[in-house]
Image (cartoon, rainbow, N blue to C red; front, top):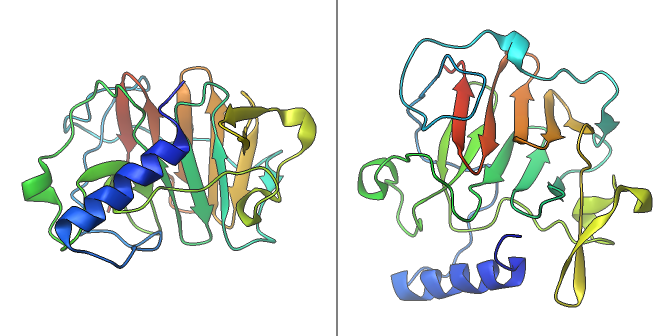
Length: 210
C-alpha cells in the first residue's frame, strides 16, 4: 500500500513551507505540457514514439456517472494510485515506488511553488506529466469527492479514515473523461478526443496528445 494519504499531505505542506508558497494550486491547473506518446499498451517509461490507437482507451459505456458533482476522486484497490476527475480533465498521482522515467523538475516545472513532477493528466487537448503542489484528490469516504461511491465497492483504511475504492473493472466518468481501474493500474481518457494514459507502478503510457 502507498504511503499514508495524510502523510503525503503533510509532506506537501512542508514543501510549500520550504518554498515560501502559501497558496495551493487547484486541479487541473498545470504547467505547459510536452506530450510524450507511446506505442505500447503496457506501462512504459514514457519515452517518445508514435501515438497508440485510441482503441486502447476506455469509453464511458457502463461507467459510474459522476457528472452530478464538480469533483470526483478515488483510490485503486491496492491503495497505490489516487485520481481526481472534473469536467475539465483527470489527474492521477504517481504511485510510491514509480519505476518509470519522468521529466526533470527543473526543466518541466516552470511555475513558482511547484513541488515537481507529481502526476500525469489528460485534459481537453493534451495528455502528459503534471506539476502540482497539491494531491490529485482527497478520496475520503463520506466526503464531497466520493458521492459516486457505494459501500460494496470497498475502501482502503488510512489511519482513522477510509478512502473510496474504484474496484477493478469499474469505470468512473465525469463529462468527457473516464477512468477504469485494473490490476495493472489505471487508464484514463478524454473520450471525445481519444487521448489518455495508463499509469502503473512500472511506468506510464501516453496515448495521443495535442
